[in-house]
Amino acid sequence: NHAKHDPSRTRFFTTTMVDELHQHEILQLRFSEALANDKLSLAFQPQFCLNTGKLIGAEALCRWHDDILGQVSPATFIPLAEEQGLICSLGEWVLDAACQQLLTWEQQGKPFPGRLCVNVSAQQMDDPRLAEHILRIATRVLPGKLGLELTESGLMRNPEQTVRITRALCEAGFSLAIDDFGTGYSSLTYLKRFAADTLKIDMSFVRDMLKSSHDHAIVSTIIAMAKNLGMQTVAEGVEEAEQAEALRALGCSGVQGFHFGRPVDGVTFAELWL
Ligand code: C2E
Ligand code: MG
Ligand code: MG
Ligand code: MG
Image (cartoon, rainbow, N blue to C red; front, side, top):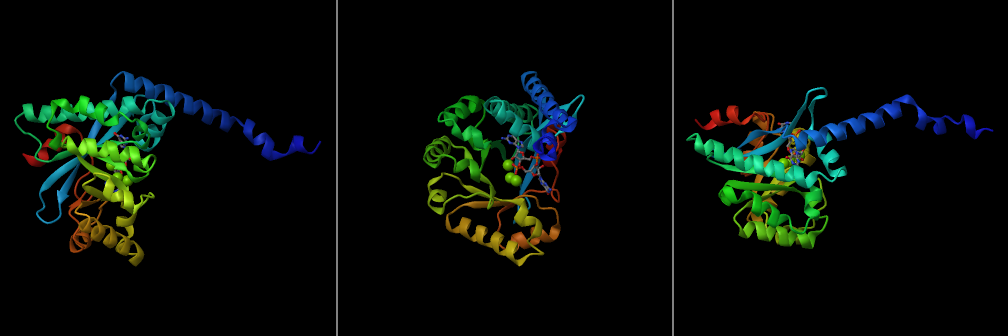
């Protein structure tokens, strides 16, 4: 029997595959424990105005350090949370921790001068009551102090629902940014119906904008379009002074990236404006 010896059939029974499955289960278990036991943390990365150089805001980025596995990237644990139906709890944890940090800085006599932005995952956008949940958690801080970053692909999962959610959040005073802009498939019709005030230019375009005239054109077009729609732009992943200069020349409003500051813990971050 030929099929019996077909290597493509036996592949599924190698120890590596079993190990990977096992590994995945371990990750899931340890992540759910970390979330339940408050073992996650937030890192803060600054955003600056390109014209004045002033600190305008920060992005809160979730961090998970596991005693055995070490530092695990959000690129790994966000999908894990989504698979396990834990993304809403994670989102609530992150928003709550961000509000707590704003209050802590305030109580220490150094209120954050900008707006703190929190990421909302694509799957959270499926929740028709997302705006209510966010409003309930964020009652302790002024809505003007908080921003939400929604990915372009997340916004387009259920665009009509997104229109309602973004409008409710905007009316409540939150600012909204469309994250990783340029990598998803948002329709221009919806772009103006979503109540977002900022487009975050995806770092893949910023990275090559000085080498590739194609990427430079994309960045330039996004900035021009945002301006025409009355929106701000924040370029992400700015690693070089030359990129910042090119972005300023194109009229980009804000920047975020390793050139200006890496994500750091809340105590280190507060040194930026003292
Ligand atoms: P994002 O929202 O686009 O966040 C920007 C990512 O780019 C962060 O990675 C940040 O550390 C990284 N970054 C910033 N500046 C530079 C730079 O100059 N060069 C390079 N190469 N990278 C830079 P991080 O923290 O690993 O997060 C990755 C993604 O995971 C985020 O992408 C976001 O989609 C997601 N994520 C992180 N925290 C959360 C969270 O609390 N909730 C949700 N739903 N997603 C999160
Ligand atoms: Mg983001
Ligand atoms: Mg982004
Ligand atoms: Mg990104």
